[in-house]
Image (cartoon, rainbow over all chains, first blue to last red; front, side, top):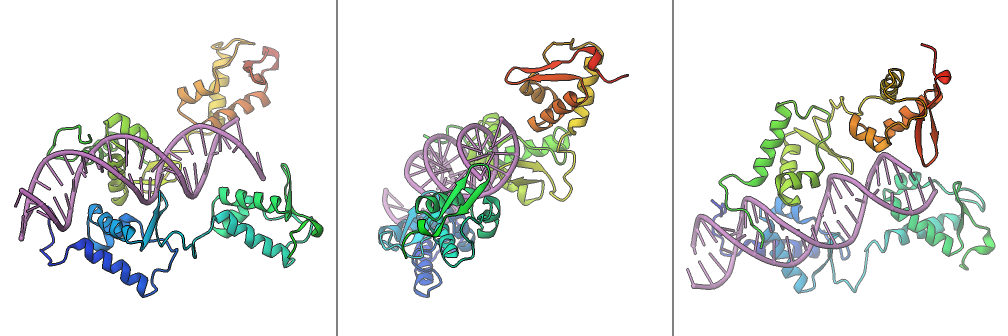
Length: 160
Length: 160
DNA sequence: GCTCATTTGTCCGTATGTATC
DNA sequence: TGATACATACGGACAAATGAG
């Protein structure tokens, strides 16, 4: 029953390897970017997971990609971090700090609620909470329990 | 190690699909009702989560069920979800008040715990809490924090 | 707003049986 | 026989979303 596909001189997993490398060369996939999920690749190449994983393993071995479980596979190598979504919290914190610096939020003004930020930034509560903590640690904001988080006074902000 | 189970002509996930469809046909599961959790189904069918999820995916694809993360899967289709949301707190309150009036619970006797009621009435804690609040408001019961909810004295009860 | 538990989503590694070439 | 490929199945781990308290 298996082996629906006619024999090819070159194994399917090799085709998938080439396809992904092609996407990278063509700029379709950039360093640090997330590859499609294994399931996605199965569908796209009409191959079994077994085959897709074999292709991914080859790409891992030659350093073309790296995999973080269970997040997925990324264009690598890992030690050359790129577009990589740093930690999401880090990224949101930087973005909010920038807005504070630009005066979008004034000292002692309330920052948007967690839920609002989740909505607006399209991320998780956890990331937002992490970002808030970073802002506090760095002097950008302070939190009043049960009330909200507010912009700190300018003299608390990090220098430049 | 895996594949403890002897080869069957029909895959396990297909059996699970049929079992669930059977429950729906037999009225055991009604539209809008919540399916058991994936873990539950694993236990019940002695299958791995992988296998259970494959079954659920098939049911999702043919529109038999829909899934809302992380609430669970429901008998579908989604645009006709009804029966669920249990019955409102109002109804449970009425039912408990009736039992009190009939003497099933005597004044100063403890009412069943939230968990017991959740179990017995097949609803959510939220509904039970809502019912308890209504009972308090109407003079049927009083709550001692951290202890429980008790039947109020007869002279506090609403007239007829 | 916060913490925690529950549940689903995804991925990982492994294993087995079968079919083709 | 061995390489390729597929379908099935188990188990564990972490991520993300949501609701309860």
